[in-house]
Length: 457
Image (cartoon, rainbow, N blue to C red; front, side, top):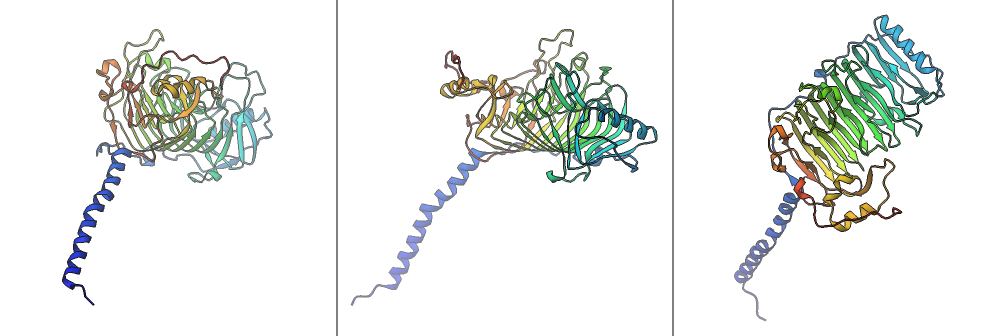
């Protein structure tokens, strides 16, 4: 019987191992590299960032005296008057905490005053009081600093700073005979806090948390120093969302989650802010801003004014049109305003963006141009969403940008500006377009005129 030469056998085994390694390793290495290049945009880093230390934005100066709110509940129309009186009494006495305990309450124009903290239990539901004549009106449930300066105020859940949604109080915006509803509007206020709310909307007009000018329209009387955190909202209108920031300096937004619309919209445009080119938005910090089945998690858009600096990190978008929208400044059609388009500070930063594409995004008509002809036809034939301004469709991309030099925009006088973009991660490839950045040049032409049918599908 012939035996194998041990030397030849060993040599054959070594040669086979080397060949196997040569043929398999490159394949194993290539796939992750290809995946990384397709799904991760490394972005830029910078050491010059706005800090997110909460102590920099809000300091609790409110006395710890606590009283229990005396309210009827069951959506009594008398509760707004009662709560306003209790706020006045406690503020005049130096301030303290008003605790709202279990129940269903309807409020309209609750006026906060200095040194008041309203703490709301987790088994409380608050909605607007629609018992009066609200037809065609804009409603505010809580007002802070509309007619006078307010300092050191807070509206939070009772277990303040608890990130567990089960500890948050609930809000509800029902269908009703009104134009729009804001849960709270901050104006001429310094050192404020809002946190711990889980709200259900019905695609109503207006964002539920608004930072705006006061009734005086004085651009020097704006929100300064505040925190908005731990908020979840659902069924939001595509044109609005969780927060609309028209004005404000040194404000921290943290742990905001919206289903529908835009979660954090730093979009100026209140008429009086456009009458002088003076910064009304600056030192804006956002952390952990999320959207699902909506338009975008974060939107920045200056109107006529050269605004300040924003620093946003931890943006998550799931089945939404985009994660981030960066809009060039524009003049618009309103009369008697300054002849400027507006920008944001070039040191602004947006990073750590995670985006998951898919169906169910709220697509506005102006974004149909980014869909191929067949998909565009499907969108045009579809029935609109309850907000009557959007149609459910497929996610388009990570960032929509028409303000940067890369987008083709040139000259600050034309509303153009560049911001620093950090890392972007796509978790899948379920997007209408492959690119991370959607510029005006990504629009698809040649589809011809597509006419919607008499009856939508």
